[in-house]
Image (cartoon, rainbow, N blue to C red):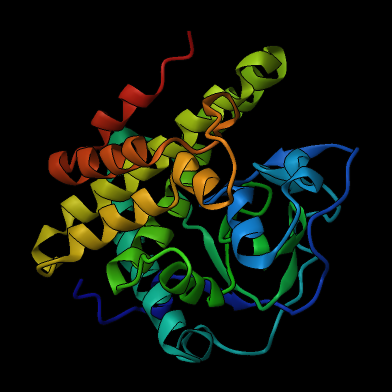
Length: 290
């Protein structure tokens, strides 16, 4: 995909600190936090025991208020130009802001662009401590997209989903969670999950599939920048991180009732639907609150 520029006036980017711990232990409250991949990826790639982390699949515990996060003296330009992956992410963020802001204005919904935070190993977010083992995530408490760019190497090496468009899909998916936050849907879902815990996983799957769909809509609205093979890269990445595929790769029995992100087929279809229609209204199909 031909994204080769960013305007530092159009993005908010920072370099976070390293360290900061991994997944919190059991107990305590947590806020919803959209992640691209489920905990099985951590087990597959990093040797983490999923049984110790099931309580934090969709988020991290509330342990640090927004605003108390490591900062740096680097400018947005310097942060973005530190390596190829960071530059790609900044280019994607610029494009995502330019694509979605007009949609919000037309709908009469207040828009605020998310902040992109790069970190290494671990960091503190407005949602608490986070480890790179959880993959990229969106924290609604500070409206931040958090990425350890080494994840992109893991995506290509361990999951067979390389290519620039696969990486753009990661950004666009997390941005989809920001859209859900701004529209109020995320809050509605968390409320519904609290009131009906038996539907918590089902509602989480819908959240993730809708974020995939929004990622596809962004790509569809920028079809003029798509290169041959890009869409195939994106669909391959979506399929590679389906719950059923990851469970098989981890040597587990496929357990649909434990899904939190959707099957490979569902994730690929959500992304494809968004790309083909290039209309965010098609993503409403993933949500009725009945």
